[in-house]
Image 1 (cartoon, rainbow, N blue to C red):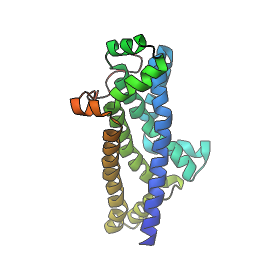
Image 2 (tube, rainbow, N blue to C red):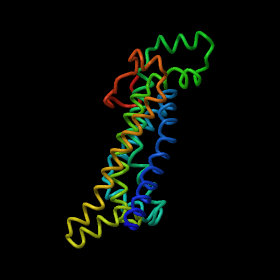
Image 3 (cartoon, helix red, strand yellow):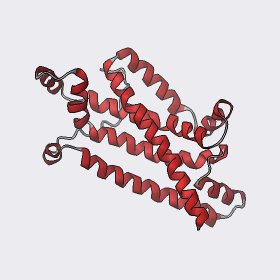
Length: 218
C-alpha cells in the first residue's frame, strides 16, 4: 500500500508539474499570437509539431537531449500538453466581440489591460477546456514516461505488463483514471470560481470554440 501511495504521489507531481509549466508558458504564447501575426504562425507551427510527434518517439528523443529521470519526463509532458492550451486560449481571446475591445480602449485601458480585464474573463470557458484536455493528456503521458525512469504509477503498470498480471496493471491504471476525473472536477470548480458573477448569471461565457483554425487566422 505504501508503494502505491508513493507511486500515486510521484504520478501527481509529474503530471501536474508538467501541466502547470505548460499553462504558464502556453497562455502568454497565445496572447503573443494575438498581438503579432508572425509570432502566431511560428507558435502555431512549433506547438503543432510538438503535438504531432508520437509519445513514444518523443520519449525516446528526449533521452539523448536531456537524459532520463523525473525532469526529462516533465519536459515530455510540457511538450505534449502545450498545443491544446495555446490554441484554445487563442481561440477564446480572439473570438471576443471587437466592439467590447474597442469600448475598453475607449475608456483608457491599454492593450494589455484589455486582454487581462476583458478578453481573458470572457474566454475562461475556452481556456479551461484546453487545460482540461491537456490534463487528460498529462495523466496518460506520465504513465508512458516510466520508460525513461520517471517513476510513479507507470512502474506498477510496466511491472504488471512484464509479468502478464492483469490485477497489477489495474492497480496502476485505476488510480490514474481517478486522478484524471478528480482533476477535471477541480478545474471545473476553479473555472466557476474565476468566472465573474455577472458572466455566470447571464451565461455570457463564450462557448468552446472546438479548437478550429490556426493561430494566424484573424
